[in-house]
Length: 147
Image (cartoon, rainbow, N blue to C red):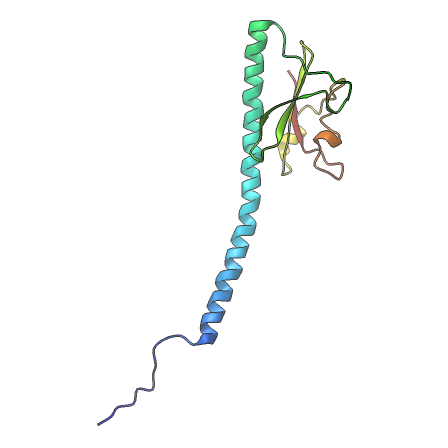
């Protein structure tokens, strides 16, 4: 005697394609939201690095009674020293004249700390609120500090 089983186990091709499409949509949403978190983490690292460099500059000042000088080339946009590297490999900017300095990093995301930074214009050096340290469209994206 032969018994016919009307119910077959497994998934149809349509069900598999729908499941794959749903997983693809969810993964793209997660990856998109994570890129903003990565940028914020890199900016937090930049701000932390600037504060660490500031501490090193204060120790240098205590020992030498002056801050390190910038290298003067005659080109206002090149009259700053590029020190260390941020998480993207870009360089932090430093300008100093012995008794004053200007230290900056370009951020990727708008940050409320940008309202509290110095936006200092270095004489003969970089400007913390200009194209050499801005994120474009006239937006101030430079986290910069002075003593």
